[in-house]
Image (tube, rainbow, N blue to C red; front, side):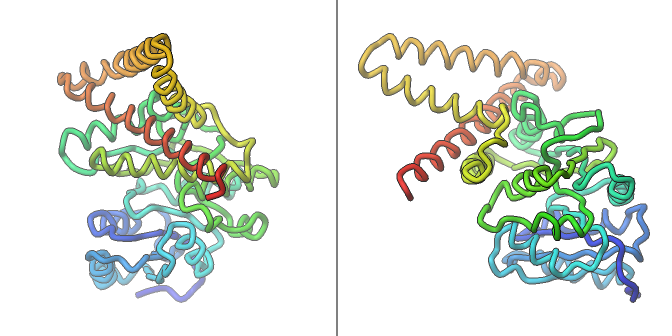
Length: 336
């Protein structure tokens, strides 16, 4: 039966139409090494239109020993979902997870240990990125999402060394962090976690990455969804940078700079053929770098299609992120 004492840990989960993975997440929480009687799970659901609620209800019936609560996120965006869950949480420690993630069975235990020992004000780990389905492109996207050419120095996608970083996926916090620096910025529909980490660091706090803390993350299944994801990342990154201009990293600056150079050279090529040659040379060099970096994927898989697919996914990530960033910048300059 559900316990009556106050939980030590509150797991908060923003959720919308996650019928395929929410059951996997809940099962992984049930199997944690952390005591289940010290745990509560709060799912902030944006009125899912699939069978997400049915999956949750069935899980509650089958596993009454774990406290699971569903609250309504009427605004239907991630930062509002997280803030609503934080407001409803009772735990001393608050750990964010996503509905399309599956944490390792010692995830909570390790997060609490690092928070308790003072390693960081926000603690997180490394993503083990898995494809969303068995199709070739889905597999290629999952490889691209943790490839150095795709993510630069975003260490939470590949590192084996613990240390301080600028951000971590999801995040585990002591409750008092939100009292000191505030909750998630609801004006940012993406990059809300990075912006919170900026405020933590500005207030003297630390972001700690421990590669022993691991979670499976399911990447996007196809190129249209990948385009949408990285367009949104770029779009909202510029909006975040307007308030925090000093926080941009080289991995974030390169895609918009590259896309801008392509656009400028394309326009100038109408006035002089030299710029058309420069455009061609730039893109050929870029393509060569991408292809050379993904050859090992073809070798490992014994399938040249894998290297080509990973290359296409990485290029999609770069161009979508850069275009979204530039579009957001242009709109802000012209006051829209």
